[in-house]
Length: 314
Image (tube, rainbow, N blue to C red; front, top):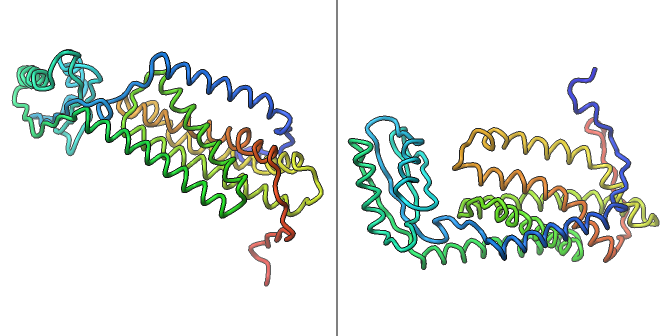
């Protein structure tokens, strides 16, 4: 019986991952260079959180017409106009940046007049303006959070495995972050504090993949003490490939609904996470492991402890 499809996956594959590592290195280098070119030519599409702007909380008479509010705000508000539901069905949050040369006060007054005319009975609950200084501090804090997360993970992997494992994991995660930022730059998707949260999620998923990869490699290094390191890496990755395919596909399917049906507000967040899952799986095999292969590992003297069946007696 072919269903469920998981039964059709072999227990162990026979791919030569190590043999493809040089080509993967060239591929990754080209992607990083492309990301650098995009950063230099057009930069990031920074959102209000990082460049400043205005937030207006409104309450409408009936259910908030999100699409109409967004259209009106885009027409009279300014750049990076965003509208999302807030609180209840009648609430909404509007975000926008004034046009260049227009003060935040004048732009906000214009938006409020137009909204009051277009949507009779609308109430303005709260109006906030994020200045350039505050937005700069938010950007600094966001990237500090990314850096601290990487350092903590380096320490954990070093303690859990060996130093070269930790460096391989951190280089691989940096590779993931750079390529994710590069993709956001190429597509000019808005980069905001929500994007920082998505990047932290990507880092967490990517590091989890590295830990699982290293754990299987360490187990096999104890079993096959005289086998060349490249062969042990191939065997380890082929043994866990079916698990990788299942978990990665499950995570992407869980996000696919929000990706295609979540609208423009959720799209940058979910798209970043989906791309991060794909690139994080790739870097576990073709960034982290090649660094270990080049550096070498210290093989412990202890033997691997075989797992006992669940129904086995002690």
